[in-house]
Image (cartoon, rainbow, N blue to C red):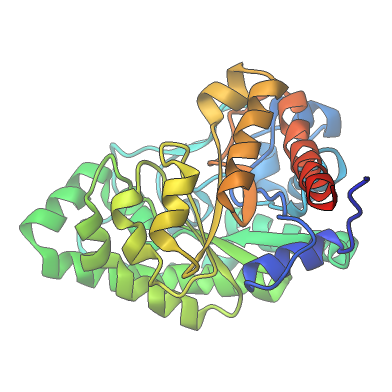
Length: 349
């Protein structure tokens, strides 16, 4: 029996984000699925595709047009806001991610935190909002357009430096909270600008990762801020945190966001068990081993593991390696459909 889809990609994603029924779990890209191969195909290479809205939209659209995902994500990196704030940038070339140079932090404490004049008109924030407008006009009726705004914890790493900020959390928790509350206004400002430009939902990366901080840190420093973000930003939010996060998923499930995008270091069934139905789950096909160095068969096995666990939206665990083979990315939506067809046939027999 052939599995028949009854929803558009946009309907499927928006229903999943709202906790409503779907014909099948959507395949999404909450962080990034741009690759060097797609850059070459569209003549839209890094770093230019991060900074020029036309190139950005052209490359982002391939997630839907070439890969068959149910969403388009034009914000490929995690540094657009930080560039507009004045951080020292290293833009790299097409086979490497642009980064913030952490050796020269621009701020030292809460009194320094401010939104520069023209923040939303800076080349690197405007590239995203204009790209979203282009994508919304061309594809907005068919496919979900997902924006991205960095959370205050991630911004803190960029503007203060990772080590100074983490030391601040130990030495002066009150100052840390003051910094985070000021930085969250940047998250809201850029996030709402993307919603106004046409984003249907926002990924909200806030890298309080399992490698760097404990689950208790999430509760102490971020839970209430994330609840506030879910209330203030007028679109469904997808929280993204890398690393092993099982120890904080119980808190994450209380943040009132639509979904949590989680790392492959967390077993899908265990993650589902911890959060129950309190928050949707997005994930969690492994990047550095499976998508980068394995083949479609291994990709399919991970997709099936997520489907068996009841993961709500199937996706790579994070921004994929830029040299990822297209055949591995194409396997993700194919495996989802095949899983649905297999289970439909078994249910009918």
